[in-house]
Length: 236
Image (tube, rainbow, N blue to C red):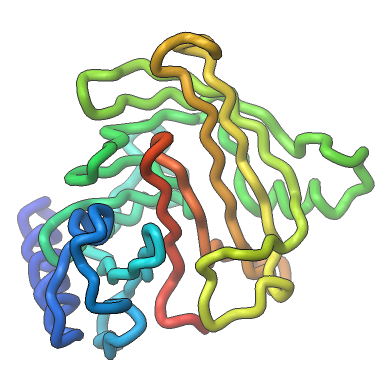
């Protein structure tokens, strides 16, 4: 299939998303708090023909729509990369619920590479085993290229099973009904304590059913001033 066809389909999906509410905004305005009329995603009536993400930043929500999926160029057998769009064309790329790329945001991750990142199925199995409190289920390295010509940023990631947290942006689901994990990123390049080195976290809520796992909610900090939550929408 040519790349042009999925892109045309994505444009149609974006228009469908924009039409699902009487208000029009984009994710950048959400980030800048310029949209002050309430919660776009919570008032919208999504078109069931499309797949949506409810995105929340600083208490303001908006909808992203799935444009298409791409194979992982580095690992063809890996889960596909989902490409999500705002009504104005900002893009968030997700793989197994993890942010692997963005464009059009105030802080962008142009690309990420983490070939040793474990699957959620393996992490769920590890979490079921007895472990010392605070012990990481797995560790690996992630390399990312950011906006503002920052490339080759390397983090050491550790993932931990955690109790259902309070104060999340999860809507329509009981936090205790999901299994929660937290990824903690420690800077390697640039090293901790130097300019540009930041510790970032991400949290994931999974639905586990008969051995199958699905990431239904995530929280990501892309930088010290930009954190966002993403939830499969509508909640189910």
